[in-house]
Image (cartoon, rainbow, N blue to C red; front, top):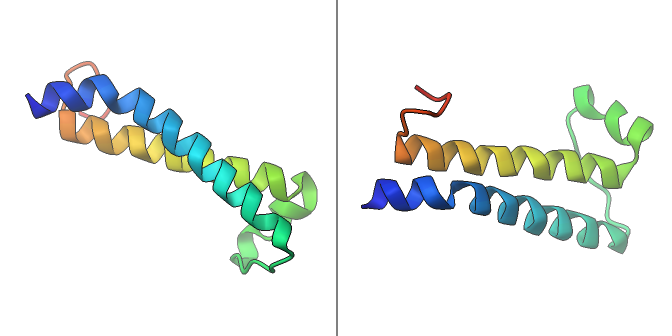
Length: 81
């Protein structure tokens, strides 16, 4: 029963995590705080801007949420076999 629930809600959960985290990152960045990011990623905000960087990070969090729900559901048609 739990597996069916997770298989049905994995995409809505991923979309909600993506939207909520991008809203949180972008709305929090307007306060003028400085962010410490690894040196290997420091070129991304310089090239694309901070908003695009935060959307990229939020998209990764959404994919991670879908992946975690898929691993819990253990569907046969998923790529996480």
